[in-house]
Amino acid sequence: MKRLHTQFTCRIFGGGLKIALFLSFLLPYGVFAEIDSVRPGRLTIGSRHSESDQQFLTDAWMTIWHDHQFLLAGNLRGGFGERNTQQLSGGLALRYLARDENWIFGVNAFGDRARVASGNRFHQVGGGVEVLSRWLDLRMNYYYPLTDPRCVDESSVWQDGTACRRGVRQRMLIHAYEEAIEGADAEIGVWIPWVDAVAPTAFYVGYARFSPEHTETLDGFQGRMESRLHPNLTVDAIWYENRDVQRSDYYAGIRVDVPLDFWNGWRNKQPQQGGVRHRLNESVQREWMIHSSRVVDGVVHGVDEIEDRRRPVPPPEEPIPNCFLDSEGEVVCE
Image (cartoon, rainbow, N blue to C red):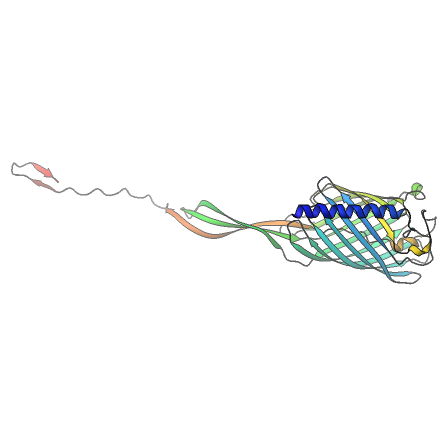
């Protein structure tokens, strides 16, 4: 039943993605528009796929307050995957545009709630900093779990062994736990100069490190590429050096932006050369799903003694015969 529900949801979401993709070529450009004021918001629908998983994502960016240099926005994000994983995130982003309009400095804070493949639910908070420009980007994010480890499975095993030279049989209770992981990631990227007028494209190099409390650290380098083929259409791909970081070697995806200001006219072109004011409207770049790992431990529940091996067991004693002399003087035993 869960698999049928997931397939049905994927079809519904896939249909919505196709509609959004069609509308994105007709609606005004809400990210790179040449404007003096900041856009009110944008809805992004996307998906990403790997060899073992596919995820569908939504992202709503809503401007709360802004002036000529500062912007405060709310960012709501949701996603679900083929493994029946779900995540909902909400956060605030504050950005500052430098006076020369060539640099943007930002900070953000998020709260995340996720349902992982095992059915457990986890909560975490996180924060990040970012520096955006026309040719260079820098981002760093931190994630801190709020949920204690959750039980996934419990079983028992009987084992025979020796303790103090005695044969014993012990019952081992095996518990499998799942825990959200504290960690951080960072990336630095460069926008390619000679294609920015046609399809702005950037390449990123990053590093992620997540430290479970009871298992080995998950870390590794990662590479990411994104290209804005159309003002409202972005394709991207990411590769992980350590597949345990995301339980996959790579993801490739597509994102479609639907601006929330249809009344501002029809635009269908890339930004003109100049500053980076248009990038104030970009969503925060951070991990979509909460990272988790499994912990297995065993506890001896009880011990039963099989036999005492400290000294050999003596053979059974034979009964002492009853012997006497008969009338003829011979020994007779009964």
